[in-house]
Amino acid sequence: MTYGYLDTVIDRIPGMKGIRLNELPAFIRITNPKYVMLNFAINEAENSHSASAIVLSTIDVSEHHVLEALAPMCMEITDLTKEEVERLVSELMAGEKGKEIKRKAMEWKKLAEEATSPTGSSYNNYYDKVVAKVLLSKLQ
Image 1 (cartoon, rainbow, N blue to C red):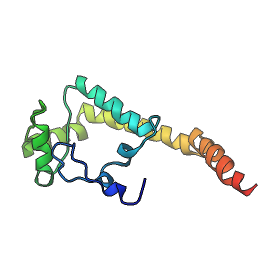
Image 2: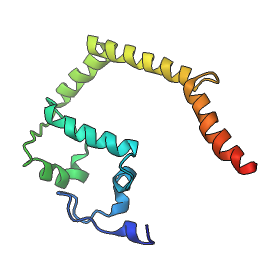
Image 3: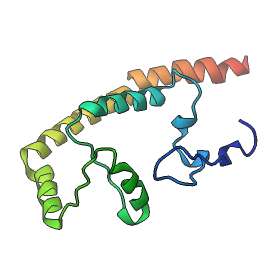
């Protein structure tokens, strides 16, 4: 990309008047169709049509114009009360859903620790692909 190109104003995103290309997530600017995050975002956008709900965590004061632009697109915007948030947090912290989420998180933590240990797949792939093939090949 040429110098200054990322300062280009994008005028096609409802509710985001004046946003520049460099203010968008990096994967939006990717030109490689095989880029993992780009494909993940495309798949999630396609899957969102079958979702029962989509939760957007925002700060209304700073993103009110974005929420107003999204509202006409058949979205229901619900203001949660303090009591509703407390109930949901309590369910996540002490309820069955929370226990299941914690169990899964601990399972993923264990898998991540195994993968990144000196005998794990991520560690070995990193060494094989980055260190051996890229860094050490430059020394030869």
